Image (cartoon, rainbow, N blue to C red):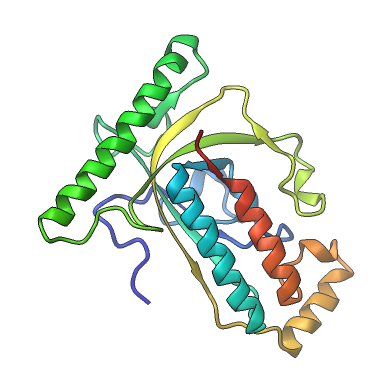
Length: 237
């Protein structure tokens, strides 16, 4: 498999997402998290907004891939997501503030729709230029995809212990939205629901909600995975 994050862009954050919640958080203190840290489901505090055609293509592809993996009795796969926060000034800062598109301020909110349209148009024109020059398109499904990352919050610190653990994500009070470029793809597609995974499910079911465990039947895994992806990726309107 080629490097999913092989890009001219710097990957500022990376997530391994399964759609489960039990044990799905990094064990690193926040101060030690950097660009090389692979974060997990409960570490995710963003919803990604994609332009309509890209969103529709993405959801169709997720549906097809999950149907195939379910038919093959495969589970425990992940969506690996890499995020590059666009920074027109230096491109080198790790803090999120330089990438801020909207803060909830009324004046900045009025300009947001214009700026969003400008960014999408700019990206598509760059893509067209590359095609006309005989080079590979800059933007394709899962690579170099412009998006808006909207910061979210959890209602309480105990949300991770509720079934699924994700329905309680709500927009943050600050209303912060960041311009981003996304890279993503499904990985770890060789694990079938064998006896070891069945035993893992049985053992962990005594410790946590059975629906929150990563090791579950492929049919349940597929549905839970698709539901989760449908909550964190939405159509930008």
